[in-house]
Length: 603
Image (cartoon, rainbow, N blue to C red; front, side, top):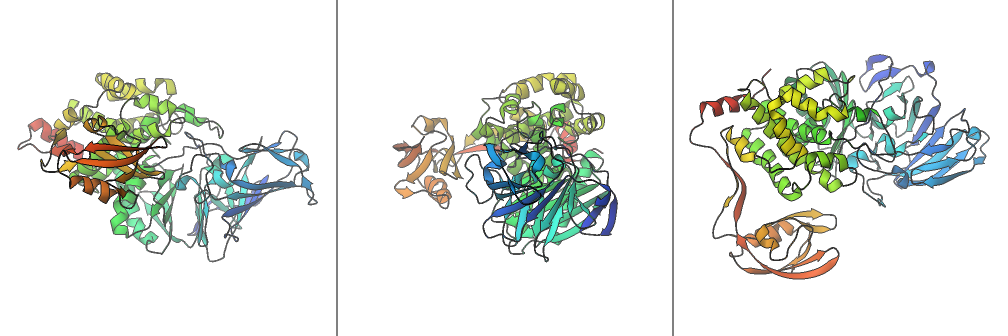
C-alpha cells in the first residue's frame, strides 16, 4: 500500500522550451529575484549526509526562525530530527548564534546579520528514525550511484519567507542525470516559486535512464534508477502509456499538460507518492515482466490522484500547514475511491482480466477487511488518521470495497446508464481545481450526484460501519460470493493470518474458534512446535506446517504478547475457504446487462 502527500503546488509563470529533451522547461532567472539560493553537495556520499548551504539576504528581525516541515497532509514526519549540524554566518564569515528550539525549528538570534546558513541533514532511508519511520518514497537517500530528495526532507524555510522564489544548485558528478518536474534556469539550476512548490516536487539524481513521449496530449517524462540496470525507461514507457491511455478513457480528458515520473528500483519495495505534476516510486528490483503487475497497480493509483484529490478535493486541503496535520472527512474518498478506480480502470481497459480483478484485487481487500475490521467507520477513520496510522490503512481496503459496491449498485439501479465513474467525471467538471468541495457539505454533494436513493447506502457503510453487502451486490453481476465455506476435510489449519513485520512474525487475524484457545491478533510468534519462526521461514513453518497436521491435532506455539513471553497449546481446526467466488450456470438478462456495462467503459 501506499502513503500519499497532498501539497498545493502554485504554478510557475515561466518560459517553456523544448530545446533540450532532458531539460523540458527553461527559466530566465535573470528576470526573477531569488532571495533563497540553495546549494546541495552530492559529491560526498559515503556518510549518508546531505551538505546544504543556503545563501540569503535582506533578513529582518521578524525572519528569526528556520523551519523544517513537520508533516505531510495527514501524518507527522518531523524531518528536523535528521539534522546533524546547523550553523549560520555573516557576510565576512563570522558565525551568527543559532539554537534549536524544537524538533523542526532553529532560532536565528540575529537574522539581519545572516548571509549564509550551513547544515547537514541525514538521509531517511538508512538512518535510525528516532520516531515514526518515513516511507522511502516520502524520504531521502544519498548513495554512491544515485540520490533521491524529497523537497521537504532536505530543504527548510525561514519564517515569513515561505512564499518567496527559491533557486537550487546541485553539485553532482558530471556523468549523472537529474530528473524533476521543477523548472530549470539557463544555468541548469532548479527553480521553484516558493517552498510549497519545492516541497511538492521530488528530485532524483544519478545514473538514470530517461525517456520522454507525448501521450494523449501530455508531455510525459520518465526517469529511472535501477540498481543493476535491469530496468530502463524504454521498458517502463509502454506500461506508462497503457496506464495513461486507460485513465484518459475513464475520465475523458488528460488532467495535466506536463508530467514527470521518477522510478527507483533497488532493495526496497515501498510504493509510490503523487504530487501535483509528478510522482515518485520505489520498488524492489527484479525481472520487469514479473513485477510489472505490482508496478502498474501503483502507477495507476498514483496517477489517478490527479483527479482525486488534486481536482476533486476538500477546501480544507487548500490551506497548507507544514506543522499541523489536516483531518478531513474526505480521506476515505481520496484513497479508497482512488484505489477502486486504479483497479477498475485496468479491468475496463483490458489491462486486467475479470479473474485478476475479482480473485486478486477484490479478494485481497476482503482479507484486509478481515484483518483491520470495521469497528470504526470510514468517516471516523478519515478524521482521526493523523493519530492512528493502523486504522488509516483500512481506507485502502474498506474504502475501495465501498466504492466498488456503490458502483455496482448505481449501475444496477440505472440499468447501466450511470455508475461511480460518471459521478467522478461530473464532480471533476463541476468541482475542479479552481472550485474545491466544501468540507461540511461533502456527503450531501455525493448523495446529490449519486442520487437520493443512495443516501441510505452512504449513511450505513461510510458514515456508519455496518457489514458490507458484498454478496448482495456481486449477485447483481452474476457472481456467487461466499464469505466462508468448508474446504478439504482432511486438511488441518491454524486459523490465523500472519505477516512478517519489523518486530517479527505477527498474527494479523485469528478465527473465532482459535481465539477461544488463547491466541490474539498482535501476538508475535517466536516458535512453532519448537521450530524458530522468522520472516524467511514463516510461510513454510506456519502455513504449510499447519496444513500438514490432522484436524484436531495439538500444537505448541511460543509468542510475545505486549513484550511478555507466553507458551500456549492449541488445536488445528478444519480448513475453510474464505471469500470464495463462483459463477451461476446462467445469468439473468439484468445480470448480463449490468456485468457488460460494469466491465467496459461507457464513453
